[in-house]
Image (cartoon, rainbow, N blue to C red; front, side, top):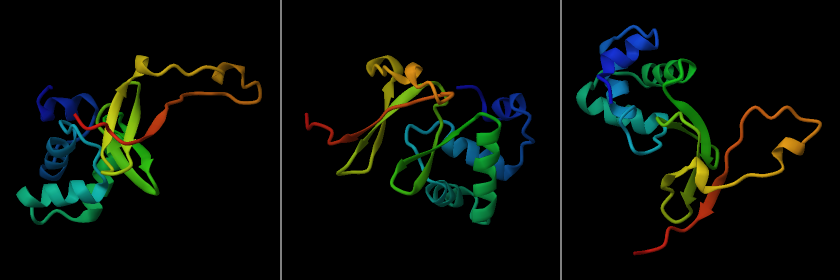
Length: 132
């Protein structure tokens, strides 16, 4: 991954200590954190950061294409650092969210929806991850 400052600059985002801390926390993440989870992590290194600053920063990153907000857990918005096309699997026991490669799931029929203009689609699978 590119250095955070370069990524922010490429997306026209002014780098502040708060934005850098949020970017370092979430952009390299392998998880799908909520805003409160990001706030808790960022506060470990930047204790004075406010919840509003973290929320506003996450939404700015989403508007600029760095993150994708998703409602994958019931009523909870998570922020996905992987903005390429992919699907999700939500483990109903642990709540953990896994990225599923785009080609692993085939969706058919969406082109035949005559009364709708489909701009994007994704599949959210729910179940239990098998124990190994």
